Figure 1 (tube, one colour):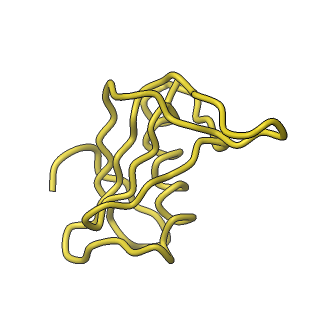
Figure 2 (figure 1 turned 135 degrees about the vertical axis):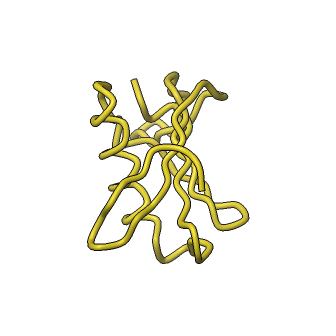
Length: 91
């Protein structure tokens, strides 16, 4: 596990923050692009699942704010290979 260690609800996660492609957020007019850094959240022993998106977003927020940035909670998350990614969420 690499990245920033983040403890949430008694479990330790890893959050990587860095440049990436723009993300998306839903608006009344449809999906809109969002610029910002990407936050990728993973857990050491177990891949994250679809049912852990809310928890992963809370970890991403904590990592982003902990590094002195703002977190855009409206950004959509994506799950691939056990890692939740929030593109454009950390500004």
